[in-house]
Length: 126
Image (cartoon, rainbow, N blue to C red; front, side):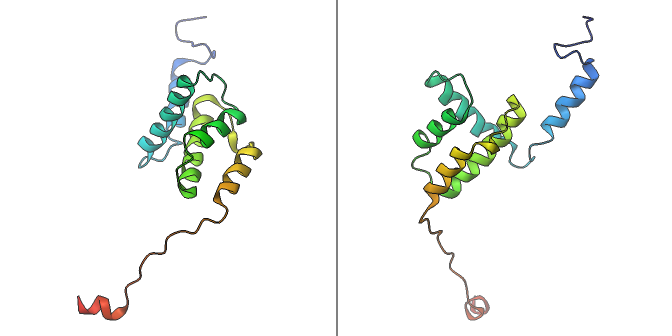
């Protein structure tokens, strides 16, 4: 293997272009949130000595670490982890039906808070 090749047998410039494309998959504005969610998941894995990233692992993570979070927050974190796990280790968790069912079940009966709406009179009087 030459010096310009990596473990994946791609030339360095191709490897760099692929890395740049992968980094472009994350939304720029919320990239830090995605990375923070993934780091928190990795820390949980290390703390619990979990090496696999499979459906059982994610079910345990969502049931233990995120039990006090609201359903929209859980879905948001699921979305972030789905993207990061796919980008970082190439596992598509969108097919984990038990995890989706778990999140749906935890959303049963959830009523979002209604925002107060100002009337025209309230707006014009201020």
